[in-house]
Image (cartoon, rainbow, N blue to C red; front, side, top):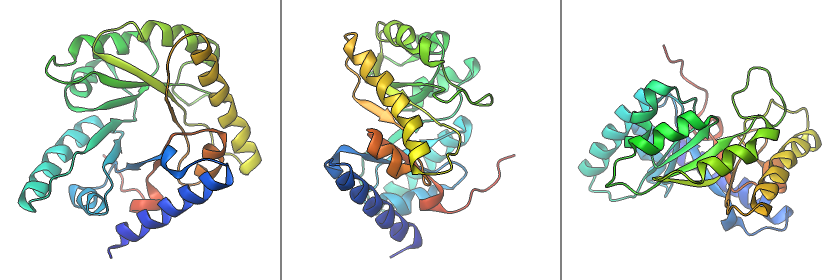
Length: 238
């Protein structure tokens, strides 16, 4: 067993334990392996364990990696449907790349970005899955729509063609303990419930990372984004 395989096994066990502690079925939480700054070989090792969903922050790096992963899988005669999630900031000049290459865009926080993704999504591809990034704790250096504006943004995005609004994503500041983390994640869950109460049909709450996935799952997360606990320390990107 490779180190990455062992780490994924450990993370999956954490997810299962957290789900059971929260009275949830383990299958209700998806593991998104955050592979940013790691090469195609690391992704292929993760795929070999059955992992199929990967998160990337850096769009140009991600697209190169997608090609390399496809070539590696072909060489190994492995057939695996891979799901790529954009979880980093999306600038206006990068929307076409996201629309053309990704399955999910989790970091949408402006209507302009959603409109461009809608217009630029190729017609032969299925609708691009969208999460709205919410700044749930007011972090001054965090991207994300403010909580009191998220309902209006959700209603506008839900009307756009070629997109499928799935839910909310948040990246709160590091919390000192489980209780503090749970309180912040509960804010996101309450927003999620409020939006659904207004008639939308969200099914995804993307929150929780290596250090705080237990609190996120307890609050209702359906996707946990785990990088360092799977791949190790980050490599720098220049």
